[in-house]
Length: 202
Ligand code: ITT
Image (cartoon, rainbow, N blue to C red):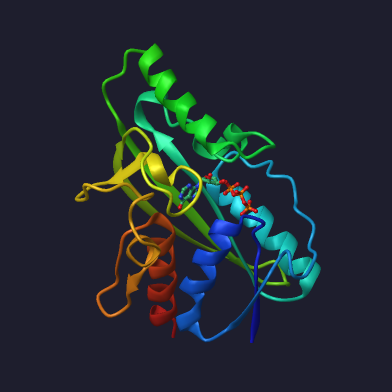
């Protein structure tokens, strides 16, 4: 069957397409279907993901996947979190957003550099049914390095690595070992929980 990938973020779209490939479904993007972008009025990642997935499923008549994600910084009480995209402004200036995070940490005299990415992945059906899968990855914030990935990738060094997501190849970042269920990124881990839920189904 066909499914919609309900994102207007090019970086996410690449990752979600590759993560969906093993499921053997034909994926079309919200952009390809000219679907409108609903306003993200939720107060939780899962709520915003459901808003986006339901809007796409209802408008297209197809099952739709949406990811709502963000970077949560411990010493900033979880910011930018839900507002990760909005912190970069209309011009999508993520260099500026990363600099702002580091200067805010300095301003507060914070030495704690712990942060994590969250991905809330919602699968919505045209009849209004939704399913939620989540993934997280923990690490430290550093001065931005590397040009791989998108968004806040250059400043995030996942636990167990010397390199940032900006220096890690896309296969390493969101690749999945489907045999063992091992995956690194928050988004890849959300897709692993989706696959595990499929296996549990009667
Ligand atoms: P859609 O809503 O159309 O999917 P968006 O970019 O607005 O696109 P979000 O509202 O979920 O998506 O915002 C999440 C932001 O968090 C995103 O713009 C990135 O800057 C950041 N982010 C999420 N996942 C990331 C990742 O894997 N690497 C780097 N930054 C990420």
